Length: 496
Ligand SMILES: [Zn+2]
Image 1: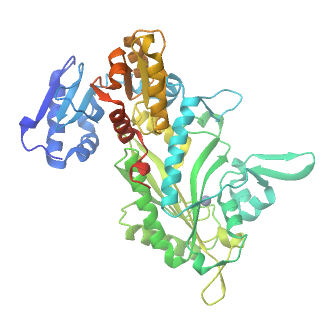
Image 2: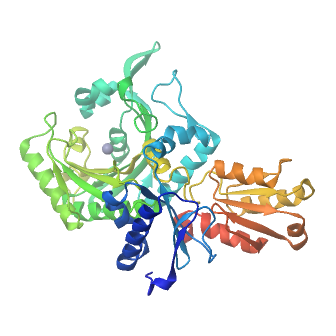
Image 3: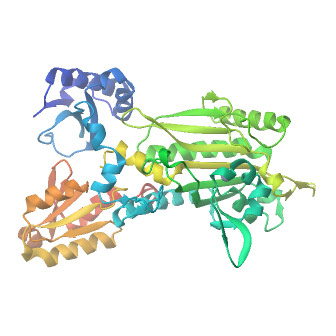
């Protein structure tokens, strides 16, 4: 979507300080609109640090109004409104810390008895589940079979896999008086997935075999390095392992890159950097095998059209890896996705498949995660959106608010209708003024308010009010239709 002339774009200046700086930023943004189209314009705008000193883009959303929202500054453009807000030095950095947002939005807390652990509150868990459900659907769509492997496994397995030797200092050990063997809390899921693979005789016709797991892992981190959800001792990985032949590596890496790009875009991240990490000092296997693994992974990455920077010595102890660092609205980079090519673990744990010549072969193991730690990804999302998550992720997508208590029964019916339509709807029928309910919904970053008054009950309508204050009276059927389009997760909308 591109403006054909300047008349289609409206510059808005209301209740803002420092107009000259705003003017310059608006014109730059407009120029990017013109040259790159809407979505890429935002990326380019953010990519230019020197133009982001005083202003950042806070909202970018559709509007049916020809008027910009009150108390705003920005660009109204072909039905889209992009708001620019001043950053006021460091003040905004405080506001968007995910720990502050987590408390303000009642999402989670941490306490001294569980260092590096997270207590998820009902609203936070809704967000968590929305992410998990979406990833689960994407993985199933990409041919992954979800499994679940034990939290606690005998140390002997970790010794055989090599984790105890290379990673033991970060592992939690435990035992029970009735079973004197030492056990460990799992720090990763790979050995468990290999056990599932090895439970049957596998043939070349079963390859590639793809397993995924929301794997709850524990790793010791020094207490000084713990930081909210960004660095924890307990976290869940959107982990996956592909067992395949060496000839299938290219296609599997390409599939992963497509999956990753689709998912990042869906979460609102359009830019990422790729790093290629090579053999670390502490590693298993021979140099010959590492040469082979590094060559295979870099060839697969190039075949997938990736350009990457080298990180010598940063690979996992069992294989080279690609790291995906995504860029948030403030231009910060976060390492999230990884894909690792492993020629060692399956052999160490005796995993085989029967080739088309009837001989046993060791499969290649591709380890990958798109989000990495879900906890950490939520922290990144909260800061990226400053709490205003997209509707499909918002813990509460719509709040039904009464104007007077006379319409409480109707409001209750509307709420149930929304809930039965798959929406996360809540009812606000408190004996408070409507203004107070609007403020409270904004405080909790609920994207849409559905106001019901006496006229709405008589006409079987609701007034839908967006977070920017744009409102419209619609029939119940249209409200459901609009909200479903706005709020349902991406795959549901694609009919998957
Ligand atoms: Zn793994």
